[in-house]
Image (cartoon, rainbow, N blue to C red; front, side):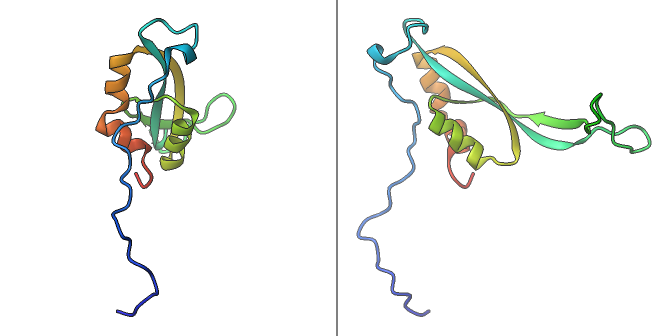
Length: 126
């Protein structure tokens, strides 16, 4: 193996965060959010399965002439910031996404947002 001129790191690289929940100080919370709750974005992702076909294998279309798509939904994902939402769509480019803003109690939001399955969906290289 030849020397590529790269220096060795003196310490390990910084690991990806294990948690995503962001504590929002009470004075910065939206006045329309109930006490003890936090505003969360729920992301529903749909994986493309195929096009709907008739018995003869011909692709069916909707009233506007577009092929009817069959999607398979995933369990929901949760985040709090637009940056996190952008990270999800960037790291999952082949999915159709719907987002909803919901309110959750803080302990529930922490649990759902920091769940390993949820955090993994927002990491690069997912």
